[in-house]
Length: 236
Image 1 (cartoon, rainbow, N blue to C red):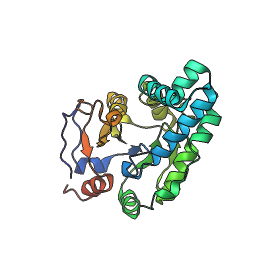
Image 2 (image 1 turned 30 degrees about the horizontal axis):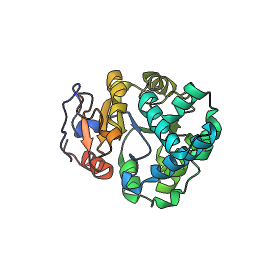
Image 3 (image 1 turned 30 degrees about the vertical axis):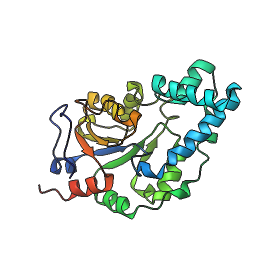
Image 4 (image 1 turned 120 degrees about the vertical axis):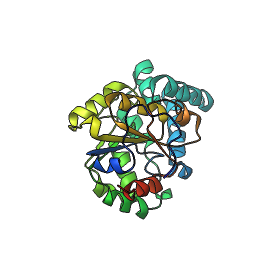
């Protein structure tokens, strides 16, 4: 099992203790599949094109605004809604109209999820339909009870604490018996504040590593499937 490389925020359970978890909350993109497939690169390009058309600016200016709003608001969408009154649904439909066949099925993840006790949910800043397409492609849809996407969060993206509160209330989660798995480190801070055990899927991207040295990260996984297998096989 990958060694935890950051301080513990609370008395987080060890590997064997995680098998008593009641619910697992997984991020979607670059978490349930490796970032090396660069599925988000397609989304990124379509975002830039949509913003350029919507605001009547060049692609370079659109990209600059896209990243600025992402850093300031948690998602580019939230910034566009707040600053420009953009209708979110056409944006989401357009940016998620991508080729998911670049992802191969993941029998290793499917097998690990089949063995993993507890409810399983996806919590994503993307649309529910995008999550469903990705999960179907990976071959893991049947293991998940629900998807909590950006629309279900009333367009409040991670890491806004309100989104986490709605997730917990809507799905009746006991935060102290819930594990959240995420590739963007800063998105784990509100989960830890609620009492969840947190797992950071290590990434080398600037936005993913920001905050990775925080005390709100309990476990670090370099490879999600290998990490889950190590948890499942931990002596206990």
